[in-house]
Image 1 (cartoon, each protein chain N blue to C red):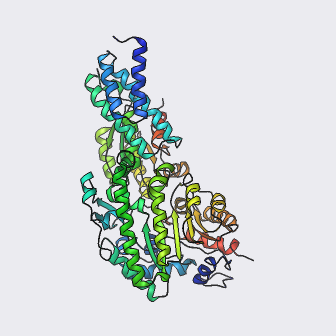
Image 2: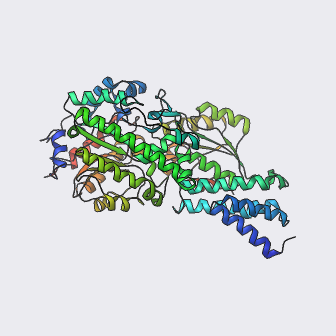
Length: 216
Length: 355
């Protein structure tokens, strides 16, 4: 068993490697964690997730941008492959379920993909419907999945006008579902006008908003 | 629509701006392809696919709202994915724009194997050329609407992949950038020969360079050098009219752009609503400032709100030392209520006159 100082050092190495998007170092530190007898879920939570949280915060503060955040999340994913088989229970780390999609007519997905990565990094179960998602498909998937949150994005002023129609349909059929929206032309005021439950200007804040919508 | 005290035509206003002379009033210009098509009853597909009908739609809509062609916007002449062999889909449905179905580059090997496209026939060049002929026949400056080399390069392989490669494989980015600028310049040279450089009006848009995507460091390393190369060639060809749509939030890039400022002066610099016009005027005193009413609000707010927004922008913009054109901060949304669009024209009529 690792000494407390070693344990802290290893977890810190994992965290820092995520932030510096150093896949090799991160994977190596994860292997070291397992050898040292560190609980895999602790390595995930305090190493990988904490690192991703910090990277997301840096993105919100415009210290990191899309390239850096993508690579941080890929580092996390690569490292998760090492730790996942050693997690005792998958569900213990599930924060909630979210359906994500880019609205009908729109194929711009960088923002949605970043949101997915941040939610996965934060321990959510993500159902990514992709791009150009027809409005009725959101309803069908929600019927099956019963997600806590539905996240919808649009990059264009044309496609964003599908969102209020989607929200109306969702609320009519699944009244308890929370809808979180985002995308370049969307603002807090527009989100309110559209009837959304929440709005987030970036991927990092999307996770925080989702947690708030869940009442936590 | 002629406004109450118009003493100049749109072309006269444009000429005055390019000679640092004040026009009679603040010109109004819009990138309004989808809106104009809808305004004149065209399907969205025909708006993009039929240059003749689209040209008529743009002319009528400009006249209806008192816009000045600065310049007139049709589809992009050059686009990355389409030109280099990817598949695009013309819009069909209520909410759609032109969408990329497949990128010509999927893997690292694809980058190496990529070839320069035909400068006359690739992508939408032939359709754009038809539109250009219509502009030529009507004595209107011919719009060369292009993405920046960086935006085009990202378009070829997908922006997400390009973003990864800016850090992991910069050499692949540089190869794509070299191909992008080579293609843009091949087409530009061809159009200069065909239409005469003095008749061309370049409109270069750079949405992928926004700080919502990349850092100023990446901008400086990858995007800026290619802007400099582009301007060197455009000037050498003798093209006198240039506009740069600095799309989205590029506040962190602005000091770098201002320091380089390698285009001919005055040029038109178009800003999104994310940029404070006073900042823009200070950084670019020798250029015409263009913008920047928030497009989404033109679509979602009331006419009064849009009128007030336009008034605010006019009051700031009129102080621009290099000149000013009122516009939306990016493309006018297709679904903008006509009354809201009129509110912008009314604001110019009420507040936009130079005494």
